[in-house]
Structures are given as structure tokens and as C-alpha cells.
Image (cartoon, rainbow, N blue to C red; front, side, top):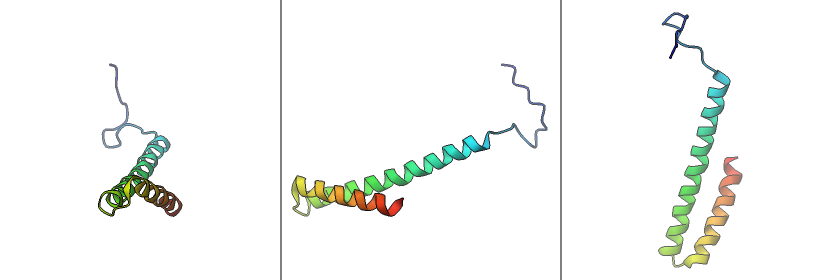
Length: 74
């Protein structure tokens, strides 16, 4: 419970900036890839349900678009 900071209030506590940047970059990467997978999943579901492609057609659409997304977003 002894949390005394001897630095001035204006400067705040010291931060581990490399760790902060690593965490932020991981968050951005997970957001980018997660958004891509969700969009591809919605497109594949639309192709399967409304486009008449069926389950296997939607699976093929999902796999092709996922591969294209990983290639384009790397």
C-alpha cells in the first residue's frame, strides 16, 4: 500500500513505454485481423444463405477471401 511517488505531479509516474507500445501494436493487429475475419464471414454467410452457394460454396468463399485478406493486409 506504500505507493509514494517522489516525482512532481505534472510529470506523473514513470511508464514502461516499450511495453506500452508492444501492447498497443498487438491490440491494433488483433483489431485488424478480427475485423477482416468477421467481414469475410459475413460475406461467406450471405453467399451461402442468399446466393444459393450452400454450405460448401460458402466455405470455399470463406477460405478464398480469408487467404486474399491475409495476403493483402500483411
